[in-house]
Length: 386
Length: 185
Image (cartoon, rainbow over all chains, first blue to last red; front, side):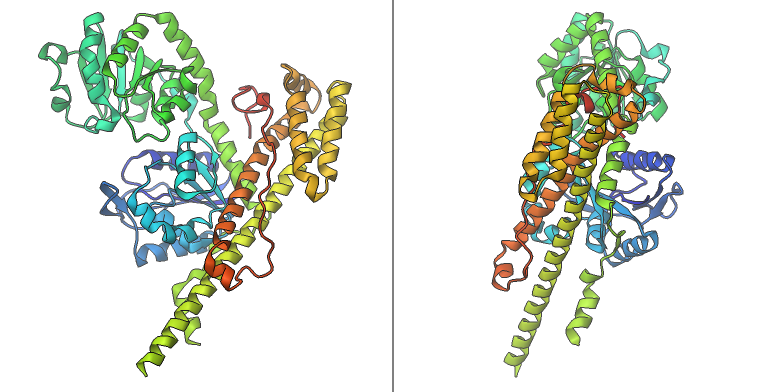
């Protein structure tokens, strides 16, 4: 099958969607499919052979933060050329409703189009205003995929219609095979995520830490992720600060080893999560997981069967659960066993099979994707003058 | 003179909008046709695998008869009865594979694991294809209900699209939740 994948976010910047697309593309290539990924990228960035650059993304304030987006005539022309040269059997667009490559590709293509909706943003005013513009582009999508039941619900509320739920994939064995590291073992709690992003929930964990240390003084907290380390421990009494170890940005290998080593992985995220890939990675590595009870997290953890949940933003509940789990190795082993069994459904072998099933369902008997000439503005004006 | 120009511009603009909307509607109808064909193919495939399993002698006689009956009915159903017949096939599949060990038993028979893999795939793909079809129907209906489309009869003689409603719940042992031993795909 010839498959084209459109990535809306800059390939140079690491992010969940980019990693998902990279792993998906490599999985499909491994199965013998021809895959081309169109992504914004700086000209100097070294790209894997299957990635085609759509030009540099421009930083624009969008949706409350600065997003790097691609738009304009040049990008649109590159999208058209990529579609034309690729002659794809199916095009898979990620985040088609963000004003970037995804939307451009939706405008420019016709034929079997599959789209994945990753985020579950609350309905914004911009989205409502843009609805009449978005709708004609979005209705070309033959198959919609949502990454979680939660993401599907928001999609149905905002745009109508329906979607199939296919979770994000993880290479389970990569994490399951990682070698634990001695110095990260023994009464350790793990946290991975941006330190200075409050939604990742490190402040909640910091509020809970004194209570955990009061009960179990030997506990250490290992934090992996970017951000200001001084500021993060400011709220702690100075004596307790040495119990927190910052590892900075870690490589994929070290991340897997960290998750293999810790006694307990805590995900205190306070919101903005539509899936929770880190929980899947933690379960793959066989870590006992304690997470806030966000909708998306509860679903990934099988409503608390594969990992424990605590009331979101409640530092006391977090501390109580962590102390209980750290004192109870049997319960942790139980969680590990359940987690390792549960996580198999997120392995690329299953997820990739499902995504291919979607491709085959929409591409069966259909002509391949072509540039959509009917919406060509110039052609229309040419027509009007006749 | 200027009035005439403005009127001409307005007429051209309206004409463009109508032609664009008609094109959009045409594309939506094509999408429904493709989705319907895909759904048809998946339903047929599921009924064929079910019938194959029923006649292969790997299930007990009672289960074989139940499965054969419903698979046969689903394949032969008239368009009006199709939704009911396909729903009954879903129910029959659930009943037959509800027994713990039924999947493992079939898989042990010669050629059984291939049949189970195919059945697993098709009970996953039927709900997918149906969701894509009904999503296309909803999108087309939303445009067809638009005032402009009704006034100018842009939909032509195309029949008003209908959703395909059926019970497509797969048997639990054939889903990712049920059994890790038979991953789909």
